[in-house]
Length: 177
Image (tube, rainbow, N blue to C red):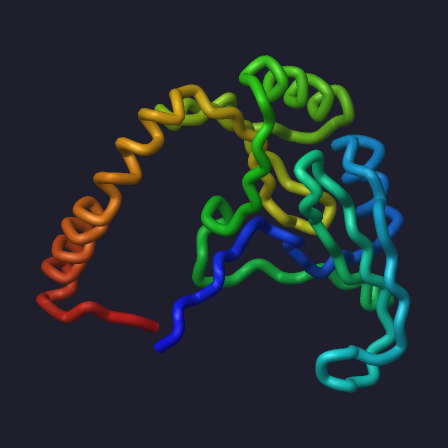
């Protein structure tokens, strides 16, 4: 099997939004991400399906994007009924803990409910929801690159231990949905 070419970075994360302007206001005016691109189409290029939409892209400092599809029906994506609301989220990194604290103050001043600052031992984070019900995390690293590498060196053995423990709880059968 040929070697997989390297994946360099996130280009964009895309999600459905209820209203493109409401989403623009939140991401551009409140979070400070520039509206960088908009695609308006009547058909889906990959499938040929007729579905009028607007696809909007907000650029982050590293050149990656958060993108949304407004399908024109004022309906937002529904959360998964079998997954707790805290599980699925998009984590965005800031440079410092002070920036995370400043973001928390700005969001709360705008009436956004914010949880945290939560200490995860390697990062400190705040959590909140956007107007589309997407849980966002703003985070800053609190450990050195060397410590992160040490955690990475131990990750496979920790995953193996979790997999074995999970199998034991399931009566020796690893269930997959």
